[in-house]
Length: 431
Ligand SMILES: Cc1ncc(COP(=O)(O)O)c(C=O)c1O
Image 1 (cartoon, rainbow, N blue to C red):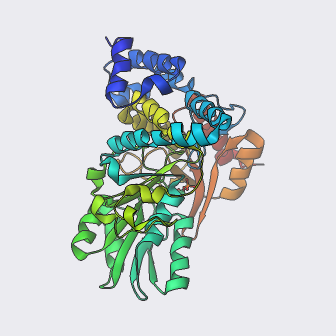
Image 2 (tube, rainbow, N blue to C red):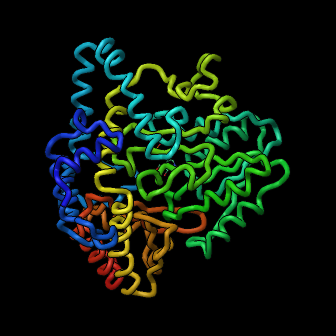
Image 3 (cartoon, protein in one colour):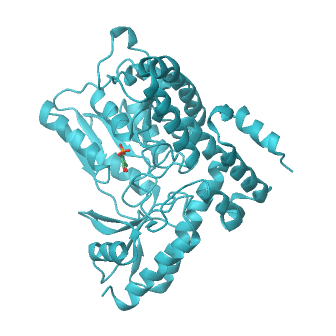
């Protein structure tokens, strides 16, 4: 049986500075959870409410609303928030000394911890404030000339498309947006849509690792393997992927990757990372200029002026919590919660369509539901105002629906209540 000591030293051996950042009760919760899990498989633990009630206790969330929009931002566990607040207070006592001299250098431990989790060298890992910043460095940082072509999909994130469109207006590059069906018939089919849009003038493909619209996981490695021999760069927007489902840099073979950490890692709001393969750094400009001596230094992407050290330093505490659960257990639970409502509602009526692949490794917690005969906008408002269930109405030119996204702190009662209300709406309407 795991002893408390070996569990804690296991976290420490994982490269995580537990003593400074891990409040005792957070360790106790994870330790108890780990004892409950024993040596059962992630799928078995996914259904064990004893285990997940320990995880739920690590959060001080407002349960007067049922938050099924964890695709926006997520709450951080209480001990992570406390560390950040502690560091903010300490900062404010004497900022030039406490923040710049004591706290800011600790970004190097965060870099090391994140690099280890992602499977890259720390010298390839830049800490950013969110995925938008990381992605905009990728999108705006590569030199392109008039007439050069970029391929994206029309399911890429809105802000990233806007960023490309600015380059179209400013520099005369050509943007090609591919479309694909949801759910797609296969991963190969998605790949074919991208391949068909590539021409001899294509320089870049930008792709989301998992879409924010339907939760579709994209064939990143296959795209990279297609693009690299043709001299095409693949930029990966992983805003929703990191710490949502398990993967490493080498699984993807990616050269560039941007993510948020305030979504699935459950790090404090205002955290993200940018990975750039070592030999690609020289040619990728930072958003805020850095000295020529920093051309090959990943820290050039962090030259952003004065900013709080507390937020990014608390990333390591969130990472320790993520590892305490374990990536395999986490994704198994997230899929369990998704299937619990999605499969029940599919059985309820043939009018229900889930536009996300179920029973597949190409999706996770995020799923999009549409119900024939029900207006998704009105349904979303009804759930929110009449039942205080937070959801995300999605309106894309090719499909619409409600995006539902639980997280590790979501209870099965909350999921069941949502499914009860949906059942009511399907049977009797929303009046
Ligand atoms: C696919 C995708 N990319 C980028 C972003 C931007 O993330 P952030 O707001 O954390 O910068 C989001 C946010 O939801 C997203 O879903």
